[in-house]
Length: 157
Image 1: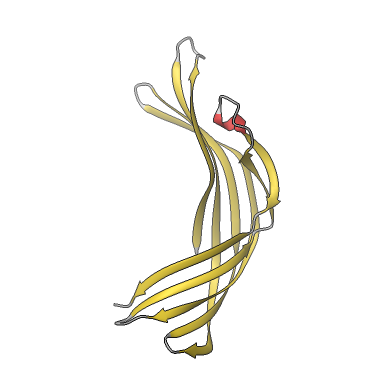
Image 2: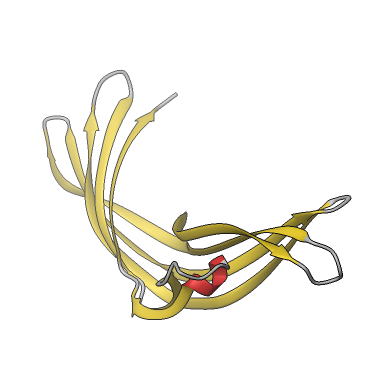
């Protein structure tokens, strides 16, 4: 299973006078989380009425990427992307959920899980007083655990 989280995002414009002429530059600074996990779902023998219960477990990999891009237009669009900070860790997930059988091969799913990501270093928005978006980010270190609730609907054809 792959998941993506846009953790923090900041955009701003500035004028670059390097090269003898004014060039308007759009700078975009952001921190994203990418997870890739192998999941296992076990349906327990406990079932009643239209409900089926299950437990889930997963092992995987998490990458936290903080980067910024400078974009400007001359004769053609140009974007320069630089990765400012990259942090990765192994993750594990435990959770539980249930499936409710509605009718005509239609199912409602509800799931809650806790994903441990270990301690990670990443860039976080700290100060909004600087002109350039990338200068408003500071290095932070913290536990990168994620608690997730999900609700879904599935159909069998």
